[in-house]
Length: 119
Length: 107
Image (cartoon, rainbow over all chains, first blue to last red; front, side, top):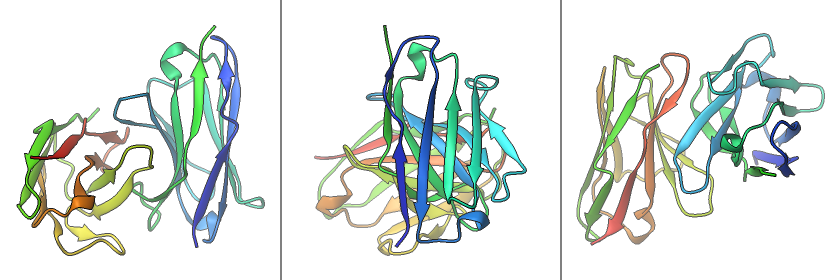
């Protein structure tokens, strides 16, 4: 059974940093592209960042480029999102999502990690 | 960036009726279009990818069609569990983008 379990969500002050983790199981992690998708309270879905199975290729939304870094440790079956210079607009539930067939649509999602940026 | 526009924002349908949801891309995404369903407090669930391929375990009452810039998700006979939010997503071009969503509510 595929499982994605996010952790690391918290309340953080503007300008602060946070690292989200997503522990994956039930599939060959290194074979799958992974993404982070966020959803602000009461709003729609916003793709944040993606990484290829090997970790050699990454992409970012313009809204987070230069502030967020996606990475993965295939030996630990874990995906990460390092978030720096956080803003109020980054407040959202952050979902870890698994790509299907190496592509960038998502057949499994985690339960989400809540990030609140507020003073 | 490719803008995905979903219509209508809200669709009121009676159980057993057909629902037709639209998704338009600001430029061609070929058939690289997925549909998701989301219920309150839950993560999205993949329904359709490749514009028309049902994901594993998705009932046959869900069907997708279209290519290029115009796409449709059809639910042939709405069941109680189908009342939810629906999003389209293009994965043809970076950045990946989602539509704003269509809420399917009970009429």
